Length: 509
Image (cartoon, rainbow, N blue to C red; front, side, top):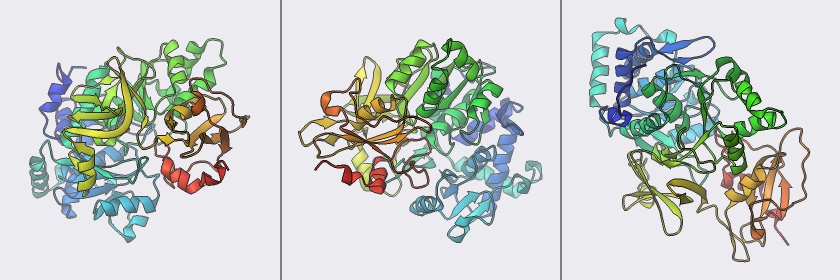
């Protein structure tokens, strides 16, 4: 596999926009398979020509340059075609997970002033409020048969796109307040993905098992855009179901996941006599490294994988940063940290411990929200709201400023630290710490299925006395993705959970 450039970051700086990257790869490596499922595959040329066909269709239907277009499709092989079709029409994509409720989807579409939404079928529930555009590969005419006028229209749209043209309206998770829409440019997305490609140094015949939602920036960056840059084949799964079988069948060299999967795998091999052999067998035998994002990997779990010689590459990023800020690499991995600052980005720790970020990935602002933009982007730095510290040149993220719990004793508790200690208990599936204004914190606990919970609080290692939970309270039901209590990556939305489950009656008398 020939390299795109001796320095990938320099390569990305020469590109005007993301469709130009796809066109270049299609010309240079037309038969390279970049996406596959059990039944289909997609080469660079097929991806490119199909996206141009869809762009021509969008233009015929009246989509204007710079217009926001919703994207709500099952995230199989049609999804990257539709995304690049929106971009090739000069429009801005608003990707929304298909698992999200119609109510929440409609809310984001209305906030973004979207008129048109790409969906799977004409009779979609969103049709009542928005103009729906049904994506169907059978409805796309071969590019050779598209009229010269349509081809000229697409070419004109492509010429109108520049590096700083907005490519994406990216919804924030809403875990730290009301969700917002970050404006991300083609340059933001290209530079962030290229930094990742430069750091992981892919080899010929690498393969990723892609299963995280492409509508989320983590997978969009790590699997889709970086995969296109480095020409890495991605096997696409519709979701987490059957992922362990897929790992054995496809034998990927790497994949991205969230902490829950690594915890599940660990519990499967923990009692095995030869844990390393069991781990290799379970993960397909070719895995060189694995990425972890969406939430911090518990320290105890990171250390266990490190001892087995499988680096779990944690990083740190936000939607507003496209999203990559720091990252561990195969050559420089320090467990329990978020890694070193990636090329093109800068990090500074404020006097109060807040992480400030600047660089190529930082958004120009929020959509139609000048106040939030001014509050977040100040003095050339993005104020993340996260608390952290530098461990040499590695970043440690310790919590959120807004999540800090102030006890009645005057002591402060970072809930993420306590929750990490609780998640180390073998029977705990989810944990959420609360207790603002109380003498001690308590924790809402979701136990694992078929486990034997121990509801008597005992001293957790690594916590100071004032951080120890006074009570462990069972959740009345599992956390809900549809209600927004957890994100598609499994991150808990603290404010919604506390509002919905109302733990006030657990306060101390």
